[in-house]
Image (cartoon, rainbow over all chains, first blue to last red; front, side, top):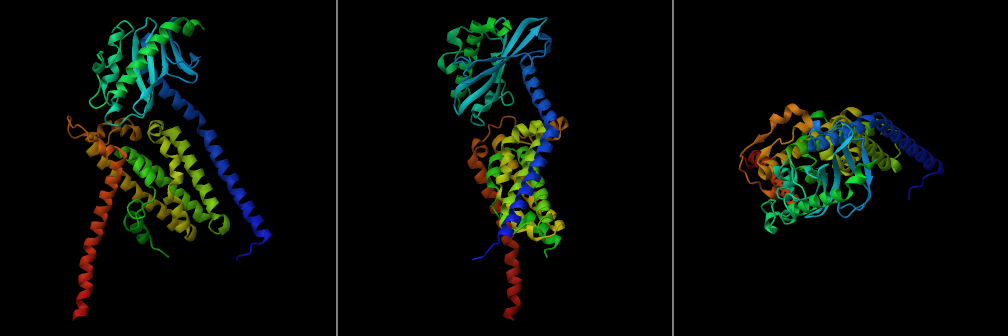
Length: 207
Length: 224
C-alpha cells in the first residue's frame, strides 16, 4: 500500500487544475480568433447552396438574411421550426427556398433544400444531408447523379398528382437500380413542399 | 535511449499504429472510403500526435504519476479541439466531410498510448519524432486503405481532392473506367475490415520472407 501525504494530493490537485485552466484558455482563445472565419465559411456554403437553386439574376436581395421561421409542419416533414429563405426582385416575391425533410428515407431523414418560384414552379431541389446507402440511394446527391435535376420546372399541375410518383408506382420520376425507397421519399417530400407553398405563399411573403 | 533510426522504423513499419498495434481502428475504418478522406484524417491525427507527444514530453518532469492520465487526456482533448476549430476556419469543405470524425481523434488510443508509452519517458526531440513517425505510419495506412476501397468501390482515385488541395486539384481525379458499376461492399464498413486485413496480410508476408533467409544463415555455422 502506497501512502500519499495530504500535501502530495494537494499538489497533484493544483497541478491538474492548472492544466485544466491552461487547456481551456487555449481552446477559448482559438475559438475566439477563428469564430468570424467559421461564421463566414458557413455563410458562404449556405449562399453557394442557395444560388445553386436560383440563378442570380432572379433576385436582388440578400437571401441569406431575408429569412422567416416556419413552425413545424407535416407537409415540410419538420417536427421543429425550420427556416425559409426568401428571394425578392425589385421588392416583389421571386422565390422561396425551404428546408424540408423527407422523413421516410431508407436510412432515416433526408434533408432537402427546395426552391419554389412565386408562380409555384420548382426552381430546383438539392439534398443537403442524408444517410442513404452509398452507391445506391446516394444518387439523390447532385455530385453522384443528375437525377435531382428532374424536378427543375415541375409544379403541382405538371405532372398531375398521379405523375408525382416514381415510375415503379406509375409516376413520372425515375427510380434508381436497386433503390426505390430513397427516390420515392424525395418525390413525396418535394410534392408536399409544393403543397405547403400553395397553402402558405401569402404568409411567407407577407412580412 | 532509442535512436532516431529505430523510432522511424518502428513508427513506419515495425510497430505501425494501424497494422501492428491495431489502434485507432474506429476512425481508420470509418473514413477510409476514399483516398482524400483518409489523407485528411491522417494529417489531422499526425498533427495531434506530434503536438501531444511534444507537450507531454516537455512536462514529463513535473507531472505526478497519480494525475498523469487525466493530464494527458486534457492535453489531447485541447489539441484536438484547436485542430477542429482551425480546420473549420481554414478548410471548411474538408471539415464538412471529416467533421464528425475529428472529435473521434481524442478517442484514438494510439495517441494516449504514445503519450504514456513513449513521450512521458523520453526527451522532446525523440518524442516529437516518435509522434511524427507514428503519425506518418498511420497516415500511409489510411491513404492506402482509402485508395484500395476507392478504386474497387467507385473505380476512381483522388475524387474530391479539391476539398483539401484547392480547386486546382480537381484534375487529380482519375477515373479508370466510365462504365464501372461500382462495388458497394468495398465502400460499406465490411470493405474496411477486408481491406485492412489484406494490408496486414501483405505486411506480415513481407516481414516473414527475409526472416526465413536470416534463420538459414544463422543456423548454418552451427552445423559446421
